[in-house]
Image (cartoon, rainbow, N blue to C red; front, side, top):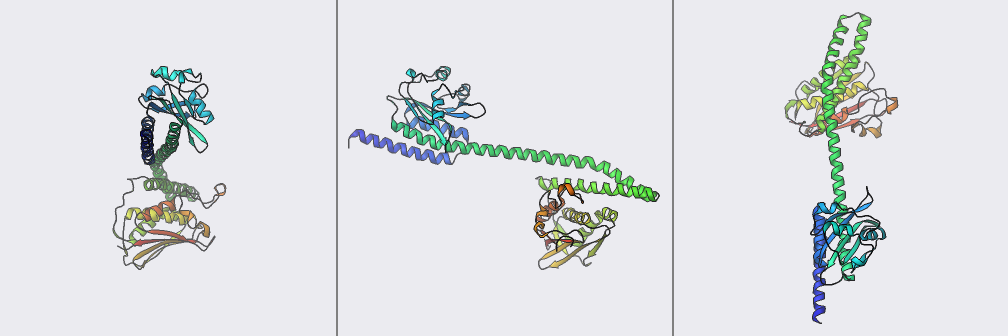
Length: 414
């Protein structure tokens, strides 16, 4: 083997080694700027040329722009748009074919504005289209081969670099787009949470005044006026329930607002508190709440305040979907290492295919244009979130439409 052939083989082995290293690095890096710099630097070294550059397609303004280049200021490069028509890069982009030019100045297709802007004299050029499947996303160029002309071997090497580069750049762009979408969603969610908190706070004071005056009028007025006051009171209590739902949902969804403070407490105590809190609205609809549990305390380790909120939502659900004047049964019992608590109503029941869907946020079992029962569809979501956050489980049982429903909660013993 001659010394020249040995050197060529050695050079090819070194190129293959560097290409493998480049592939590994590109697959483990998603920082777009770092990727672009690595690609151009590697291309310059492997092709033994003065510089390499990457031009990407700007979809908003149909043209190419310099995304990176070795030995050049990225800001200065960005100032020079490269047209699709009337430039070598544009021809490579449009035809999806590579170009080797070893006398650039004599070629009328050369776009000299870049050279003039950067004060860089281009003598030889090799350009490769960067493809993602059948779509050209840009062009990678190498310029001014040292001591000799660009060859087909150089074209092959740059094609490999361009193929890896296209995939890596596409992945980095997808990641950036995904991150931006997540940030936008997070910002929108925060705005929603802020609005719900603000709205609920602003509504509480006027609602408190309305409920107070309506209660006073109902007790101290004649029959007809008292009946009107009762309607006002019922509507105000329903609105207060919606406001509390808005607040609780925000608390559940916002990190840092829902701090669980567990303690040993009897199930009966927080069930009675929850029943007391819905007493006014239950009375307004002439519902009778019946306790189905023993007096001896059954202890669980939970956050009493959060459990009251959960069961208030379950009771409000029972009140809303039960016929006026019906019974609502609240019970508890020991079940092995767990405590079972439940809210049972004689209401409209739940079809079998909706027993799990009703816990989804804003889910409504009724069509929106023919609703009879009102509500935002978040009460059961809140109850589920608060119970599961404390290691409990909740599910619904029903024999079907018109057969009533039972919401069962399983909690760990204290």
